[in-house]
Amino acid sequence: MSESAAPLAEGHGATMEPSPFGIPSKKLTMWLFIASDAVTFGVVLFAYSYLRAGTPDWPAPFQFSSSIVNGMVMTVVLLTSSLTMLGAVQAAKAGRKASSLKWLSLTVLLGIVFAVLHLREWFHMFGEGWGFSKNPAGGPVLFGATFFSITGLHLMHVISGVIALIVIGIGYKVNWLDEVHVETTGLYWHFVDLVWMFVFPLLYLMNAAR
Amino acid sequence: MEASRNPGIKSYLIVWNGLLYIAGAEVFLTYCGFSTHMLLAILLSFAFIEAGIGLLYFMHLKYERLSLRWALMVAVTFVLLMMNEIWPDAYRMASLALR
Image (cartoon, rainbow over all chains, first blue to last red):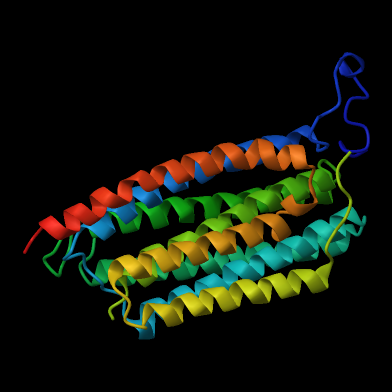
């Protein structure tokens, strides 16, 4: 039985009030995590933007033909993975487990593609001499520190999301978890997608060679 | 309990397309010759629009109870707005440094 259908049917449920927000507790917990994580990303992105706007000789190493195009492909991949995640949630809510699992698998695959593209970009930059405290162009080293820490934080969220989707998919397949778990994990996945909507313009486009 | 309305796959495709177009517009505007500060303002504005659309449609916040929307968004929006205090000092740094 899903949590939304009978949230408080057991244990101390009879003595508890229903949720004022009309959603299962695990979904509310995910929303609260997302709110706090949004502030975390907000802090690091604002700190980066402060340095970027306040440093006249900030490097702009990203050429259109490789890095920006790569970033655009990553954006398309991540946005499409949100679409497949919506397919998984809709199918799970409709009770179509096989279809939901198919969409979940596709979402995992797109998440892995995103991570591979991201790491490829990183290693390309390492090869050019960029590092956490290295600037081969001779300007501020904070570019490397901010770029690798912020994109690394986002990449960690993507990899965590892929692992979570695999665990949720297996649990859902063997009836250990239900459709609310799929929906709740979907919320996290969409959040990771939305964060990229800030990371790509601020970290890549603002540092494009123009 | 939970709002059961769902926009459907057609609406999702429209939103997905819209987000792709906005991302494409960001790339186009990057090469339009704006100053760094103007470009930063434009890209941040577009990013907030994308985030709002994603929150409302992909994350279904539009279809949740008003109480949830208020409980979540007021605090986060307040914190993010307060962070905008940094800009005057960032611009001051840019005008002072490394001439």
